Length: 215
Image (cartoon, rainbow, N blue to C red; front, side):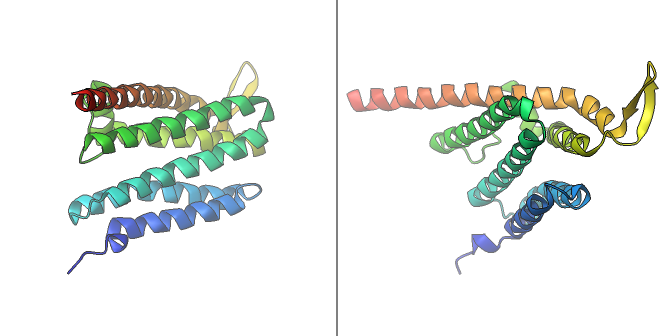
């Protein structure tokens, strides 16, 4: 009997992530608590779909694409909201959106044309570490999302005061943004690395195809 990939357990979890993401989008503009609960729960479920995919031997390219697209769309929608909250930084958010989408899309495309079993396979040391070390992947992804969520909360308030510096109170959300900024920064470097290595792989494929056709 043919398996129905659409009904694989990790993909069902993926659909629930999409529903939670859309609920968070609906409440994003003026209900920060509901938004945060739904948004972070959707992001947290990202770890569970991969676990069940391996546990039940239900890995699939559809699931990988669903997972990546959900992540990209959720983060993009949050950055669109942030560009509205902080209009003077709109160009920065536009750049981050462009980098995030282009790097991941090209990386996935290069994996497919190379015939890799997974987009998490890479010959680059840093990308291999990023994908194969679960603690590294978790810290990078969660830290990046927490940085954006902290910026989101700063729009409403700086949060309860944690401590003061030169008689200037430092709020919880500001502190969270400062703590996670280095992780966010490294995550953008990883996206640039995705873009460069994937471009090199696609060009190498083009060269090989041209040699094959010329011969």
